[in-house]
Image (tube, rainbow, N blue to C red; front, side, top):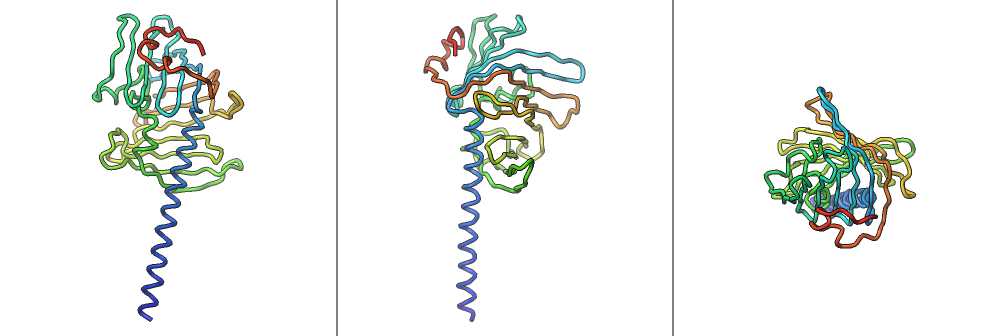
Length: 254
């Protein structure tokens, strides 16, 4: 009898390991598909960014290109005083360009947690946007139904020694790969900020949230809002698009 119990317990334990492994793999796939859906194989976007604080508000018109999971290029179009400012992300490296001094500066690790373009998005949010696929362990912690869609809540814990700012992220992703919400926690697992999506519209034949809002939890009247006006997915983009030369001379058209 004792031997039978040992066999049963070992079998249950083995099956539980298989179940956990499958669940982790499913969570990885959900995050991966959401990220790839978000960017496509490549993309071009025109959008406005509004930075709102309790005592001021300012807006910028911008455009940007992405390719694959790690390359991105953004420029400010308006207002005139900021036009030409740009950011280039290549792999995990990032450069900032200021046309007034005609200089591209590679951002050191010490500057990655600082604000991107004065917004509530950090340089790290942009430069390591794809690191969530490799630097975190993902687990589905909740599954609900909203408006006829299954919505997965995924807890992403940073791997030990991973070079990341956020100790944990929590994502809510629909079964059609649309990311609805993303929460960012520091190394002490304290919630710092939250990004939410709203206003699903069709861009280039693909449903996509028209508005993304990033809010810090410690300031009620502070947020950064991205509002997309146009997105085109799956373009053919040349290698020279994502170079320092183009960052300084943005003449290539989509």
